[in-house]
Image (cartoon, rainbow, N blue to C red; front, top):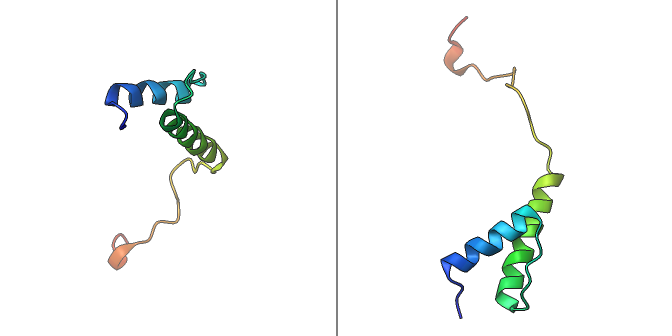
Length: 63
């Protein structure tokens, strides 16, 4: 059985806010775990901040 958009939204909110799911439905658990894993992976990635100073200068403009 496919999950309703309402239920998907509730699972997303629970996963992103760090709440427990409170369900034993395998489809819901799989979606919850997938979202949590993606969030954990995003936390591990480096975030590049600021403006890059080594821009490529196309066609030699501004010389």
